[in-house]
Image 1 (cartoon, rainbow, N blue to C red):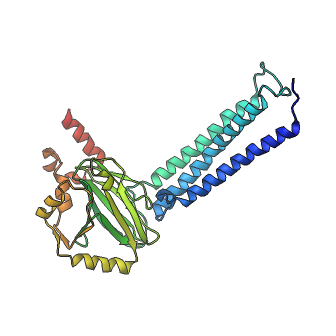
Image 2: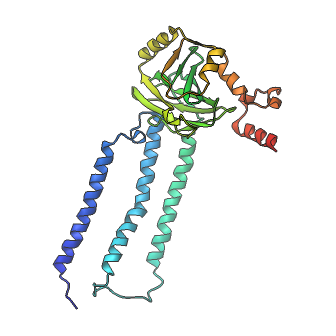
Image 3: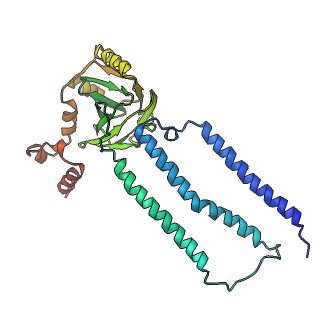
Length: 317
């Protein structure tokens, strides 16, 4: 049998380790050069989500890295040509091994359970953000295939563009007048669904000025790929100037104008409306309400989402 050269084996092991280190370094560098929105948070919520993503990833590495390292070590140590490896096919009952492969996962799952519980409540999209600054409300309507933003307090509206002051809570109130969609500004927070006849909420707060990409995160038909919008965070002075500029627009979002806007169209440009019909959001929302809910003392759009889903299920049966 051919003798093994210990020095060559050590060199081979060192080269393999260096290759893995080089691959990991190059991969990390390459990812850092990419503009991946969720990895470049610019808002209070997205920063917390980013920290959660990094924490859970590093926690997972506690298991993943040792598993891959052991797979390589075992394959190398017990290869056919290594005659020095100890052969113990009858070895059983290792308390140390049992403690490791049961104890470590239990500890990690316990940590993840606690983190999941706390972060789920802390990052609840319906939970208003605490701030000394007065929040602004923006009503969002998903259409085929564009986004309509109504500012009820400012009585203006825009298409495929939403602007708000930096370091100011923004209360998005979201519905759809089209197939189910998903509202998403990756650098500011997670996505939330927009559904006809229902209202969902999302609270965001940008910590830096800039233009952020907004899009649909739910495939909704032919024009889905062009269903993008600009989310612009500016200073309070620039925001006020922008509102004044929109108010000066000659276009007005009347009921008849909305009917034209709601028609299916793709690759829609940014459009500004100097005024908007009062209660337009509620009118659109009520289009899909059941007659039975319209006559109740409590307005249908004030019902919880779960209650409304139950009513829909009962009607279906």
